[in-house]
Length: 111
Image (cartoon, rainbow, N blue to C red):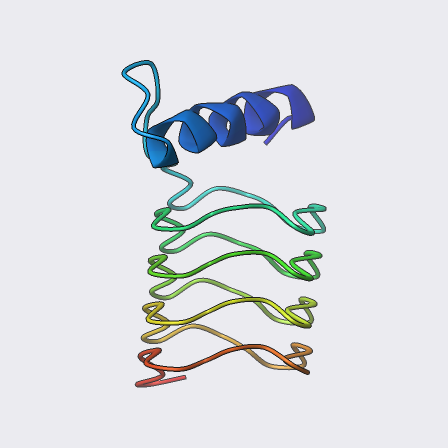
């Protein structure tokens, strides 16, 4: 996915979070986000199911209530990320850095 496209999706998602009529929930399902820098991104409630986030930087990202079912997070940095109540069913976390991550209430079935 191109940086410009990702930036536009994140901006629209931010508006959605703030109940702006112009906003739209981020649908990044099955997106190729290999190595993407999403550090500090607010992806609360976003759909990242099946996304390829291998080696992505998600440090300090807000992934609360996000759908990460079957996402590939191999080698990703999730240090200090908020994954509270996230759906990680079947996600690949091999080699992911989860240091300081909040996994309270997260569904880790099949991980």
